[in-house]
Length: 146
Image 1 (cartoon, rainbow, N blue to C red):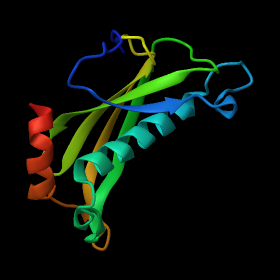
Image 2 (image 1 turned 120 degrees about the horizontal axis):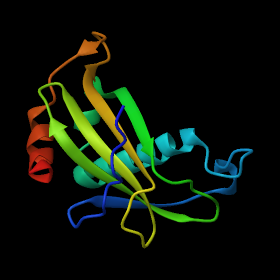
Image 3 (image 1 turned 45 degrees about the vertical axis):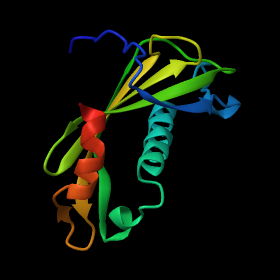
């Protein structure tokens, strides 16, 4: 698999600030790989809370997002202490899914130390199957995807 260049910070990238915690490191002295997925999850949730505010019916109607796929390209090691800006950008809105890029930056730097990619499928939890992304969600996210 070809290695991609790190994402470069840009003006329309929504970011969420997080610290690297001492416990995020592994025995080799750098941030453990799985922590990058936690950083991405925290940023995605904060993003949805900011975009939708108190519009909880989108997420409490028996359907909602479920993580279908996730991957990460690591560009540099990350160590404690560090302050992070974790970006969120909707890269594609499909009829049943969202693709999200979540680059992880050291605060004040413009090149990502890691690029997390995820696919969220809109899921009907009662029927246990994928369903259409609600039009209200699509309408609110589409301008952010342009």
